[in-house]
Length: 356
Image 1 (tube, rainbow, N blue to C red):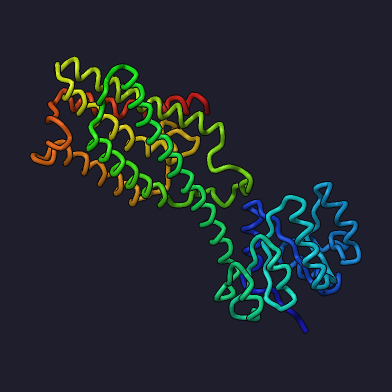
Image 2 (cartoon, one colour):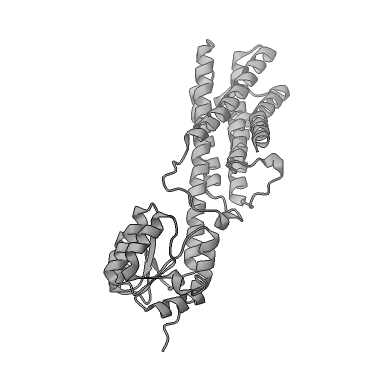
């Protein structure tokens, strides 16, 4: 007689190992059986010293405190599974538990992520689990981990973009007010900036595909904030560069054109362009596009930015529509706006490359 391992289990263990996730067997079988299963899974070489029996839980506590975590536990009673899950959590680990029987329901509930098998699992396990595998395909868990990591990273990209660009608007308005310019941008221009730059680029960043090395990175610290204090400093720097570039373009255009209203339109165009270009900098947390790094293709990102640039072009050049946002831009004004919009991205990328 045999109790074969489930299809895809060895591949799942290997994928988890590369992703920095530790896999542990909790079984009620005897030591020899547990060792044989561990060998088949590629989890253990089958040495008796690697197998911890339920009677040795006190030793496990001492070993886990030293950072030496056993991978196989044999002759474990249902109540001891719950005990082990709680011990792992108390040591600071995030625990996912896979189970299919009634005896697995207490640890499934206690685990940070309870995973039940949809076909072979009992109703009690399915009802209490956080995740149910409808087809019992274990390898799909590796895909779930990859997608979860991708979503978490993309959310951070979008938030960093929104924080920096909105902060740039605040800095721009405060500096202009401090310089005695009561209306650096009109209300309709501010509304347009928020409608255009806060939506499409952030959606494009949220749809970024997974990086090729995503499943070879270690898990992130669950206590890590969405934006760290160090990142806030970087975002403030980026926002200051965007605001300074737009403010400089506005002042330059106002002086060259002898018209404050013309300068206002140039400042508006420069600020929008700089914010849209900044989305490229947010695709990477630390790498620089000047380093030649290749990003995974993302048609949605380029489609979103292309649509945003097209909408901005319509606001600046389509007769009737452009009257809402100020006087028409001349060739010189358009050149100033484009240069001022690209300058912050180039400066940010040069700083990143110098720091890497």
